Amino acid sequence: MTTTGSKKNNIIITGGGGGIGKQTALRFASEGANLCITDINEELVKSAVEEIKASGGRAVGVTADASERKEAARVVKCCVDTFGSPTVLVNSAGIYKDRYFAEMTDDEWDETMRVNLGSVYAFCRECVGLMIEEKYGRIISLSSQAGISGSIEHSHYAASKAAIIGLTCSLARELAQYNINVHCIAPGIINTNMTAGNSPERRERFLRQIPLGRFGTPDEVAGIICFLASEDANYMTGQTINVTGGWLMHS
Image: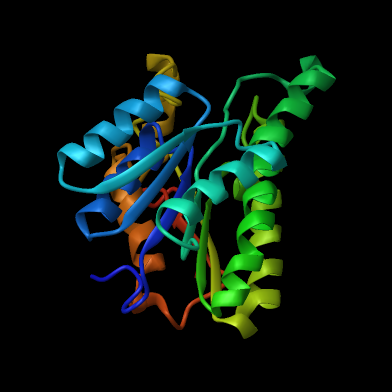
């Protein structure tokens, strides 16, 4: 599967230091893409870039707060200066914290919106103009099944992820004329550091709701991201792809 056909594959991944973001970078690198990895954790950025290079891939890393517009501009400039204009943007940065709504502070709500939704806004704003100039682009953002079905103790998280779906559909309609396809993915429970803190009781409760009877892996989500960025998905845009082991099913 080629990522973007004859186009030069310059890919920015936010939250690329670990989990789904890092695994997606490794998948793209194996297909010959140029990777610009950003994460707020400097050590994770360095480790991800080293792993990509050790596998024979090409990568540059930038430690940045993805939710800040100036930081997003700095990352995109690094991609342009190193490889050229980005052809694919993967918005993977996000946080996930337990809190009942009645106990939630304003700061907790604002932080979740800033990181989860603000990062998608910031990077889309920086990349869209460049993609319009090239008459080509692929934008893939990580939403969540919580953004579709809701989630107890995660109203702030669910609201931010639902907003990503709305933004995706709107951008898909606006940008289709420029050959820019926009999608999001709604993962279910994926085995990452973000979900590692779930108690055994909660994990068992989740498993009972998953027809496939297991949690997903970062590579299974990364495979869908790579597909959406590939020429095999040229006639798709504005889609939310559920990767939930069957927890969510839509006709």
